Amino acid sequence: MTVLYSRTDERLGAFAVRPLDLDTDAALLHAWVTHPKATYWMMQGLSVEEVAAEYRRIVEHPHHDAFIGLWQGRPAFLLERYDPARAELVDLYPAQPGDVGMHFLCPAAEQPVHGFTLAVITTVVGFLFDDPAARRAVVEPDLRNTAVHALNAAVGFVPDGPITKPEKEALLSFCTREQFLAATAGARA
Image (tube, rainbow, N blue to C red; front, side, top):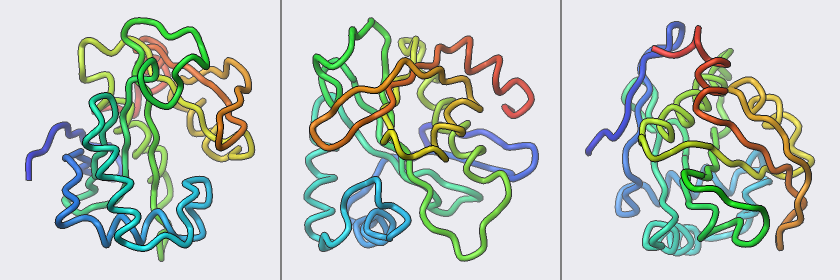
């Protein structure tokens, strides 16, 4: 499968991003997004077919796509990228040219690895900014998800304030390329 982006974390090793392949990834994706730890993904109770149909809509959308993140060559996290002016945040904030939105999910781990989620979000935002057209990353996690707010801050995101989406109250936050580079100077490789 084609690797679109890769980086080496000083402590945890090789991370990469590849396209989502629903023919081979549907069962894995289902296990990740329906797990109780993934409550903010709002997919609990969905079947493999329903999850696959939702992700088929995402990958077929002209302004939204999904990827599988790899750690040491194995599937380890989920990433969605979208144009916030055309998907997810349409008319909810003043979009700027070069804005790119993202969601990411680290699935439940049998044995958590210290620093793993920070290495994942560093990889995710690095992937977004690998595109020269990307000028600012945009996130809108659930307002109650304080763990992800801390991770976002660790890679340079600055909260703009709460917004109301149809499915949740969210904390809209932004991170410029410069903020990301300053926040992760010691973590990137």
